[in-house]
Image (cartoon, rainbow, N blue to C red; front, side, top):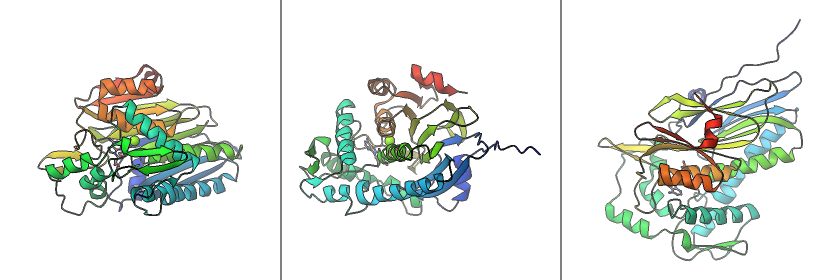
Length: 353
Ligand code: AMP
Ligand code: MG
């Protein structure tokens, strides 16, 4: 007569990849391994969908109202992308800034985000820069890796130099709750969009006031863990081996709320004559970053920081990247081009083989 309400769920992004088999643009970033103890009377919401150019996977545990919370979250992500942060929508706030409108009024969250982006640009000495929109569009690796059906033509050196000149965080003026471009640059929030979304998701979960006991939300390479599993075991987030994306290097075992983001050269790339050109660009050269690393994973309480720092640290490489992560009290795991792993002291406490 006893039913076990403990469900063993093993979700990997690869199972989502199968579900979304026709979406060629999906690429594995991290595995989420959930061995979830879902107690009696606990409601579970499990939903996989697309948004922000990636696969969104949501597992929530709580009361029956968790269902409406999950709907609210998907709606919020769509709204945020279309109305605020995507350059692809001309009427979004970023779209309007990119058109050169003066003093575009920002909401408090986007205002803080743009200020924080500028701060990371300074702290990373320009390795991280959201104003490289002209460069990212010139390389257009995101579009190519999403469709994969066009002949990729490498950009000309001269065009790269031009696009490089037409970028620079100092041309983005953020003050009095507004933003203005002081030179015709273009903003691309691709490096932080998912992290920002995780922070907003966290706010909604906290405001839902006890409705959601715990959960894991994955947006491409960025993951939020929230609350605790009812069986007392940790959340488990597997880190993809950049040399063999079918494999996991190890697992982060986490209790409570965390944000984890990975930037890697295996996520979005194109190969021309045996050379891999990936989507993380070095704003100082205009070319895909060549800092000797294959992937960087950042663990932080903040979604924004985990996402921004994973991109920045990828460009900076192990030594300078580790320093930057430390400056923001974030934990880091680097894998270099020889396969060697570098873990910050704090990361060692969570990373298990
Ligand atoms: P992520 O996967 O989080 O590392 O973000 C990569 C995305 O951020 C790219 O697809 C570009 O849209 C954008 N990006 C690439 N290089 C940089 C950089 N150095 N600084 C800021 N954004 C970048
Ligand atoms: Mg990032």
